Image (tube, rainbow, N blue to C red; front, side, top):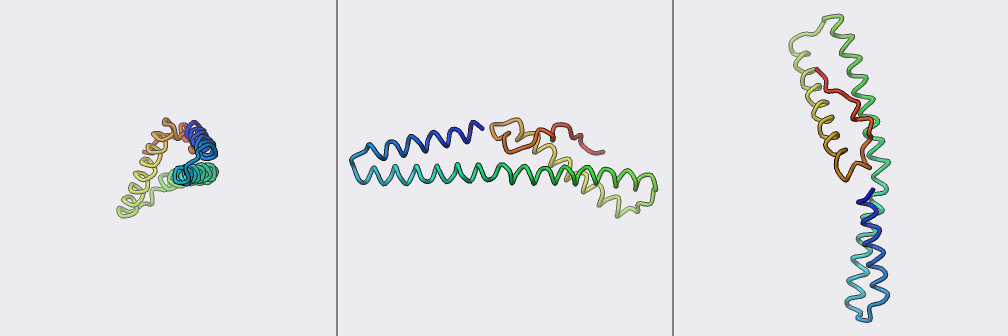
Length: 123
């Protein structure tokens, strides 16, 4: 949230300075910079719900994978090559959980769901 607020403040300062400056070259440069910062702010605002939807879908996918894995382990019908594929999928899910937990602890935590902290790495 601080990141988006910072972009908004920089854009406001840029547009205000653009209005008060008398030099046409400086006015153009300030306007261009403020426009770019405003565009970055809009992209950031749009990315919040998109990122959260993606993470929600991935969390559901992880939970369904765990349920499928439990049923498969109960049946005991996995062959060696299937076990290798399951292990690869488990590794990918665990890497994703670790990555999202890292980013959730940074300034970009607005983009990531806190529900990820409840997920446990798969075994």
